[in-house]
Length: 415
Image (cartoon, rainbow, N blue to C red; front, side):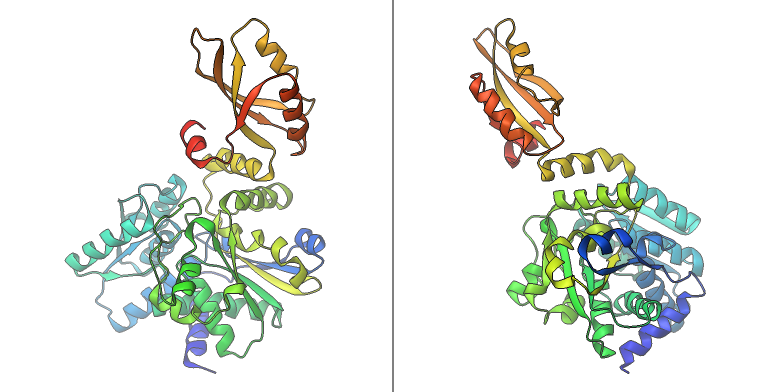
């Protein structure tokens, strides 16, 4: 057994003094749907509702073992790592200064304060994680504190490997496949390294959000690169640049084993898990489940473990999740409608709607003395094919319209 594997097991044993192993639960709904034996490693049920407590605890534990006088720790986080660090600070009785993006969901900020209590101070800076990271590192250097990286640290990677230690012990045998979410790479690097070092032949698949595919970019370039644009919707996994240390463990993976999850599709998965299973997952926590349809042919009849990495979801975001999900499923569309300025025109339009169609938004964007006015209209329906017949009826009645649902420029401005 390698030194890394031994250290990961030692880290796992040390964690039992702080929290119990997270559940590994068979999911009957997903198993039946895909004709496979699908298990969920429920990191969303850790004390801080994500796996991040593992790396934070292990890195702080090891630092204090070699530097017992270290009393000040600093980190940057979009939320989950912050909560793990806050929890560890209170456990070890040390001070923590935590930098978070201004855009961090309020729920994650509140929970970080709850876990850390008087031991932590929170500073909000920047719009994305990488800006908070730069500020945190500068502050840490000035204060002489110890920086706890959210992923690009050997002790953090070692701590995240405890997920694999627990999973294999709980299942009692190696699964055929494990699906790993990727952000900065700490979890995926730790699990990949442990599975490799213990000779486990389990197939590994990786998934990252479309708007933050930093591992895909790194694999293409042969080294970590910084993404030019970043969609922060999947805040727990949207990282502009994968870690240098984590990439050392991931650089040899087959690019075909990396899957990309569109943000709107992730919302469909989140709603399905909430409505069908009663499981609350944050966007990053739903990544591994989201790609199951793409892997259906590979997993049929197999034992599969999905790592649900976190459940820190602010329910104030639920309307946005529902909106994105409906747009992905094709059951909600936005139109720019050219409406005649005459009595009865609106009634004529309403009569084109089918029995399953509903108006979710109606707003005049331009109403003048001209013969026509421009209307922004949002329509929801039950089945996506309803729009084909609706558009046919609208055209037959002479209504001119433009579907702007997928036009990022226009939709981003008016929706």
